[in-house]
Amino acid sequence: MKVVAVIPARWASSRFPGKPLALIRGKPMVQRVFEQASKAKSVSEVIVATDDARILEVVNNFGGTAIMTSTNHTSGTDRIAEVISDRECDIVVNVQGDEPLIPPENIDRIVCPLMGDTSASIVTLKILIKTREELMDRNVTKVVVDNSNAALYFSKAPIPWDRDEWTDELTQNSTFDPLKPFWYKHIGLYAYRKKFLMEFGGLPESGLEKIEKLEQLRILESGFKIKVIETDLDSIGVDCEADLEMIEKNLAAVLPSK
Image 1: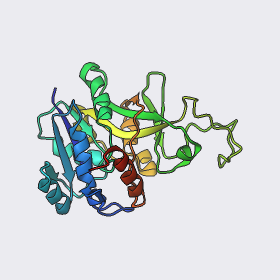
Image 2: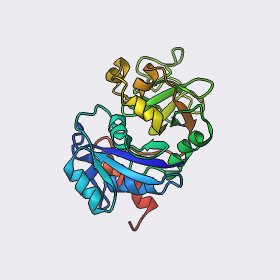
Image 3: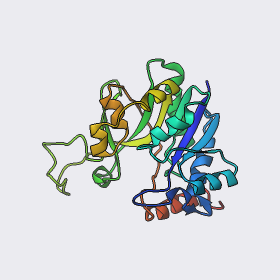
């Protein structure tokens, strides 16, 4: 089966315009993401899907593959669907363009179920939340799953809410047990069967998606299931310029000479 990884990369981020080209130890972020995705054993091809000529030029200059897309897409998945519509492949991986340290193993982990489980169409990842601060962080998406590990809901809010133990603000006096397997961070990495991805492109933007600003809610509202697999390998996202310092420190520890 052919697996294609696509990195949606747009210029006009409200909090960090031009984010894909932010330099991280001498390389633009989009190149860091591209190189990590290329290390995944299951991936045959990596493509950057962009709506900006500056990003296209940079990707071409470092030897990557980039495709220009419409500027009218409301989500990265819509952008990916445009790129993949006329491409021969079986499985498509949506790689977030703002996670320059993404573990290649996580990509392989979500592709694997689609290789053998014909009932699965979409697979994503979760990781146990270990701190109160992470649980309350509005930049961290949380996920709740059912007994078969299908997603029930995604939110930036701290879900599920422990009504008996927590105050309204989850103060320091409230109980938070990181060993309880209830609170999970969603890692925004997806693997889709191409057939489903083509269906997604035809789905209207949903009400919950508009409220939460989470495109995966369009999938749930439309009646599809998302299989969620647990990982122990986290990935740090860049939401604003201040996050670059943390990425630099992590990269220096892993690759001190690069």
